[in-house]
Image (cartoon, rainbow, N blue to C red; front, side, top):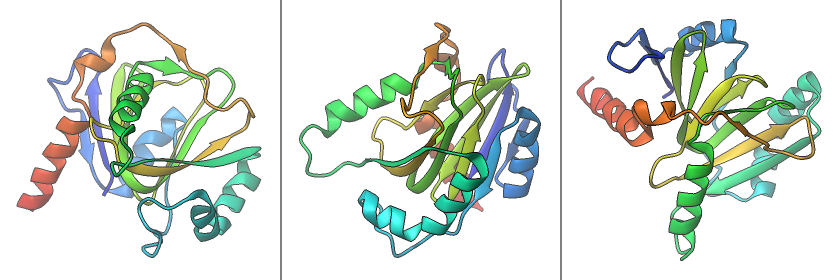
Length: 199
């Protein structure tokens, strides 16, 4: 399930909020202009599905969101361990690209997780909000919002990406080292797994 953890921007010593309730997550993110939704999970869709399979399975949801938001480009991005000998290099490069704090001038960052997981860290209003997204989660980060994304040291996910601009993902990096001062994906996910096992 999804997890939202909020800390002061000064550091992770104090937890302001921690919840896995979808309604609470949506309510907490709404004042930031962040869109959070849960879509039906298509269990019959393999975790490493190709684009055609994903588009067929989630066609109605994709069409609805595209009509509502005026997206011009929709694609599917997948990164999974497997037989690809280039996976370690590709995974490291992808993680490093998104792990630095940045903004987008011309587009929102809208992602739906078909499988796997990742964490969006939103730096806004003096706080850092870590949103652990898993399959079935859609998150829309508005343009201009300072954020970073961590897929972990061994990424495994498939996501649908929505764009208003054909140029796709263009990040403006702030140069801040804030991402290094907060728990990374591996730390947050491991803690959440322990909590779920104890429940």
